[in-house]
Image (cartoon, helix red, strand yellow):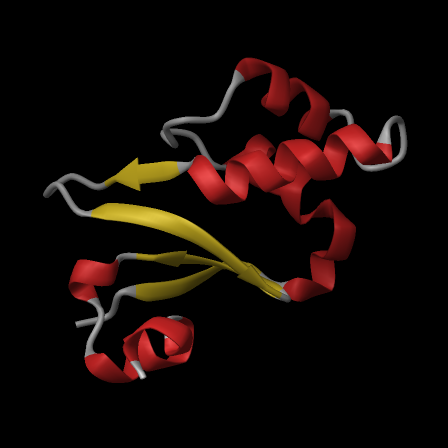
Length: 100
């Protein structure tokens, strides 16, 4: 059972937040203000951009068609994770500080 996927790879760098809000609908707990800031890109107001991204990474979630809750995790690449679908190896990889 796979509970982790790369959503946006690291070659997009500082544009990952902007790409995320442009291309991925259906996520909950993202304020309209944060969306607006992220859509403007990283150069107009870098402090606000990274602050908005911090809010998104730490609060956004997605509920799939069968009720699984997915969250974001960034470590170079932007991943989506569903803990209930992860096997122990996946949990160790992403949540090493919790499960080992």
